[in-house]
Image 1 (cartoon, one colour):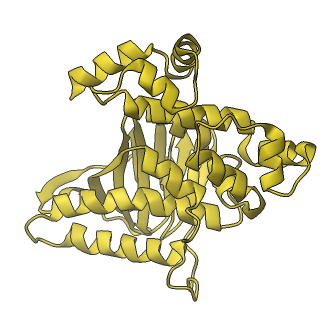
Image 2: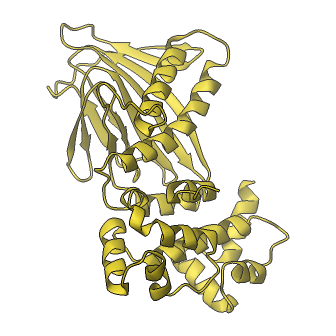
Image 3: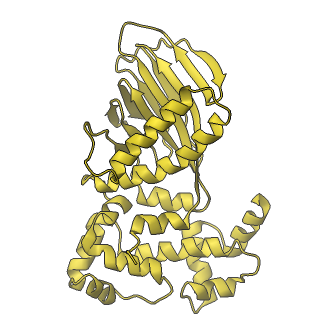
Length: 317
């Protein structure tokens, strides 16, 4: 049986849904602004045609985007997209098709923008996990000519984006629901493409693309209740303890022990949704012999006690 990669293992633990909010078509000059997203939301933009400049309102960072590029803002930062001129002249005409809302405006002589905008919804409390392990801005560049491997994430992503483009301009029944379903797949493929690019930023994506660390990561996901020690995890990777710790921290930005704790608390949050699972049973299922120690760690990581989390889940569901 093939080994399941760490990215797939993590995504199996969390619930992500997608929503395409609007398709935008503008001629230069144009400028669009987004307020900070809710804690459990990740805004995204797909440049179907044209160019755009993204400015993060919090960090001031600037990212230039071209046709085929995709950008996610995992921390939900307020941001501005514009054509580079910073001229605010964007008279908008709104209409609604079967694929959802569409905005267009200013048929200027400059290059025309065609843009898909939406957001991913991360089921709490796993939004915290995503923010901790993904960068403030995640950009996946379109690769001209593609990869010969049809199974590569970049090729699959390009095919998915093209399908989203066709559905968004079509006038078939169920277009909006189809686009939302495709958006959910977009999240996974963007993460895969970023991890395969060889330029993954420090965090989960860099860790997922590091084959030497894969045995330890897979073991922690497969058996999180086991009291793993650093020497044991290092042995699985045929590394010394010091080398393992250095590689792990360089790639993830935190220790293997911290990742194991996050895996355990994520699983615990899922188990606490089940009425038949007592707090004691949940604690034991992830390797805690002391319920008090489990409660302290869960509260520290999730910002609420197991009981509060369970009640909040009951209210939502």
